[in-house]
Structures are given as structure tokens and as C-alpha cells.
Amino acid sequence: MREQLGVPGVRDARNRPLHDLRISVTDRCNFRCVYCMPRDVFGADYAFLSRSALLSFDEIMRVARAAVSLGVDKIRLTGGEPLLRPGIEDLIARLARLRTPDGRPLDLALTTNGTALRLKAQSLKDAGLTRVSVSLDSLDPERFQRIADVRISLSAVLDGITAAADAGLGPIKVNTVITRGVNDDEVISLAEHFRGTGQILRFIEFMDVGNTNGWNLDAVVPSAEIVRQISAVYPLEPSAPTREGETASRWRYVDGAGEIGVISSVSQAFCGTCSRARLSAEGKLFTCLFATEGVDLRAILRESAGDDAVRAALAGIWGRRADRYSELRSTINASKRPRIEMSYIGG
Ligand code: SAM
Ligand code: SF4
Ligand code: SF4
Image 1 (cartoon, protein in one colour):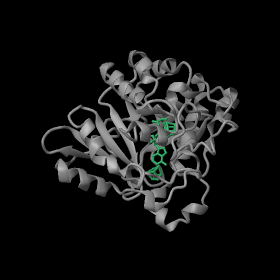
Image 2: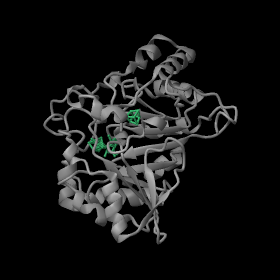
Image 3: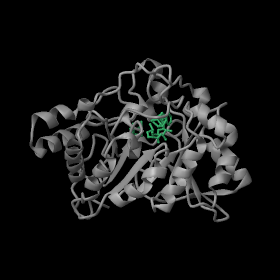
């Protein structure tokens, strides 16, 4: 479609375009979710990136401009917890002014644990953010604190979701990682809570990102099981994807109470349409969530003042890309392969 409109773009070695850029703005977080930043690894003495190691907003903008010139029209800010990065609204305002080569504004989203939304939702909207996704794994106050491994209350996140909706940052997607034996008994209550609210609950399969979260296949609850469970109570029917390369499969309630999404990264790989690149907070570019290493764009940014060098580097990296980890997961000896932590690479 974009190509038909005469918009230039790069294609990787498997003919996939580059459409989405996820930018991690910090590797720090105020949560210690057990499946992402287990406290015994990410404790008081953990060496997070120093301030000078982080890309500045100017540097992030240079990468974003290059990416947009190569076909990116969707940028998601993530982390760690992106709302911990001081001045994030300034970065959003600058990204919101970017236009695609055919003159369209970007789809500008942010993924957050929601705790700062009560305070920041309106200023994020005013800065030009299009929408937010909020992560929430339990509606039980004690279990919520156990999974996030914090004392912050569940109500802070629920109030954050309300504040984001009031500020016009919708439709809000609520991301839930379902883990067998941890919160798989909450599928129906979560569905009930968000049905009819206009907020879109999305179930994410527990993934083998990083090396610290003790992942094993038995802990994964396949999306098909979740759809079956909900459908038995509130019938669902499949809904068409809103855009090519979408990670979630959409299901709508037959009674008109909205929709849910399922992200089946483990049980049903979607590498064939994966159009996402990820920029770490220190400027490494990853072309797969499960990559073992990224390309150091910060060195290029700090060596050369010209944007052409960044654009050429990005185009070259994407042109060589052949990643399809999820499709190959069962054939790779996954446990032996070092992987980047989710809190570093950005989910
Ligand atoms: N801190 C923000 C948040 O939690 O929304 C943004 C970063 S977080 C790494 C992005 C998303 O990754 C969250 O929705 C989180 O649930 C998800 N995530 C982290 N580790 C995961 C894992 N092992 N499997 C599946 N999803 C995971
Ligand atoms: Fe923090 Fe998000 Fe990871 Fe939880 S999932 S520890 S909120 S980065
Ligand atoms: Fe994309 Fe890599 Fe995930 Fe496949 S495994 S969908 S290539 S990020």
C-alpha cells in the first residue's frame, strides 16, 4: 500500500518492510516483575546504564528521522519504564512533529506499567502521544504486588488507565502476561473487567526473552486455550487485523461488548510479517526480540554529524536481516543461546 503510494522503503532479506520502531528510553523500572526483572538479578547492586551511556533526545531523533525516511510510520516508546525518563514529553513532542515521506503523522504509542499515568496522562496527550498500552497482570491486589514485586497498589495502575482514557489516549490496550499456575485462573475475571469499557485486553504468551526469568514451555498458556475459555462464557469471533504485521490476533465479542487480542509469540509465530526494529536505550539496534547482539548506532551517531551515515547504517542492517527466532524456536537449543533482557531491549 505504502509502496503503491510511492513511499520509499527498505526490505529485509525475507522481503519484510521496516514499519515499526520501538525505542527504549531507559533500562530502569520501578517494578520488578518476576518474569521480566526478577529482584534477585535486578537488585540494589545491579549496574544499570549510566546517564552518559543513554542516547540523548537529539540522538534518538536522528535515528527516528532516518527510520521514518526508510518506511517507519509507527514508533512505540518503551523501556524499562519509559515514564521514568525525565522530560519524556519533550521527546514525544519532537517525534509528533515528524512526517512520513508522503506527509502523514506517525502513530506514536507508549507502553507503560501505568503508575505514572495519573500524573502524566494529560501532559503526554498534550505533547502529541497518540495512545498508550498499559501492562496489568492481575486484578487481585495482593497477587498484583506479588507479580510486580512492589508495594505500589493495584489502584495506582487502574487509576492510571482511567486517567489515560480521560485524557483521550485511547483506545487503551491492557497487556496481560498469563503464566500457568500464577494468574491463569484470572482469564475470565480480566475479560469481564474490561468488556464493554472500550479498553482492549490483550493476552501475551509468556516468552523466553532474556536469561533470568526461569522460562519453561510448561508455564506458557497457549492463546488458543485463552480464546476457548473466554468464548465458552462470552462467545468470540475472529476480527480482521487493522494493519499488516500486527502482533495481536483480534477477537470480538459476538454480543458487541468490544474485543480482545492474543499475542501468540510462542504457540503461533508471526515472524513472516514482522516489521519491527528495536533501539535500546544506549543506541544498539536489534532486528529481533530474541537477538543475541545489536548494532551499535551510538558509535555512528557520536562519530558522524551527518544523518546520511545513520540512514545508510539502518538501511544496511535492515537489508541483511533474516531473523525468525519464533519460527525456529523448537529447532534451536534455546536454553543455550544467550539473549537480551526484555527490560533492556524494550518489549
Ligand atoms: N515497563 C513497561 C511495561 O511494563 O509496560 C514497558 C516495558 S515492558 C518490558 C513491555 C511489555 O513486555 C510488558 O507488557 C510486559 O508484560 C512484557 N513482558 C516482559 N517480559 C515478558 C516475558 N517474558 N514474556 C512476555 N511478555 C513480557
Ligand atoms: Fe518493569 Fe515493564 Fe519489566 Fe514489569 S514488565 S519489570 S513494569 S519493564
Ligand atoms: Fe519478529 Fe523476532 Fe519476534 Fe519473529 S521472533 S516476530 S522476527 S521479533
